[in-house]
Image (cartoon, rainbow, N blue to C red; front, side):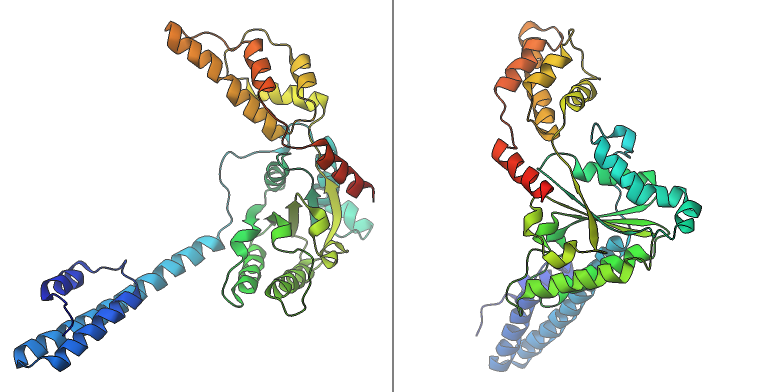
Length: 350
């Protein structure tokens, strides 16, 4: 006879152990029925059977709870996601060429529809942002959505993928269906190469995912100008060739590291709420040539440690010094190497 305590099972049923896996509960039910079968005393047999029935009811409650959680999760996925501070193009430092390209491709068709209609120029379609990591691709797309008053659907491509057959394709279909309900929407695929890399084996699961993505994009290109599709990748050369053909991601925009003036503006932005001594922003920009926006963010954060340490030691809050920033710069490293930049420039010129 299986060693299952009446009291333990009663407590399980009473407390409603919904976190128990259904598999574990089925094992308990099976053991209770086996015990009932082996029991010689009628009362004991009935008690085992009663508890097995109660566990069966608990299994059904667990199933209902899991279904409810899935429904709530699905409802949440239906809603556009807008988190963090609302940003506009004016909040995006540098990237003038990128912002101008997005204005011409996406914003102006909404602001001047009669002009675009006069020339039978269609809006919508896909835009691909590519370039080194940490250059502000996600930020500029979030700002784009706010510039045109669109619902923003940012998607890490890894979140759409599933190990279960057909579920990745279903997730893609659902994403486009949800966006289509919005008056105006921007679907943003971050790390697009993770979802749509070059296809190999014709029967592979990723091929079905790429095929579904292409089909979904084709269904919106031109037919629904209010749904805009933007992708971002650090490795554009990995993308499936069919994805970057018109009218899918027909426009590819290179997002490079910040130039001299942009680096000055980045330091001023990140330090505007910090008590500082007089700073030489031109020198800071010169010392950080080749650094990405993310690198400069890290440099500023690192430099704050030095005045904090002085304040603790001296029991007096002072200012962040130029020396603090120079030390932080000397201790930092560029996340984008010259070799990486050469690769992007070569791809950009092809």
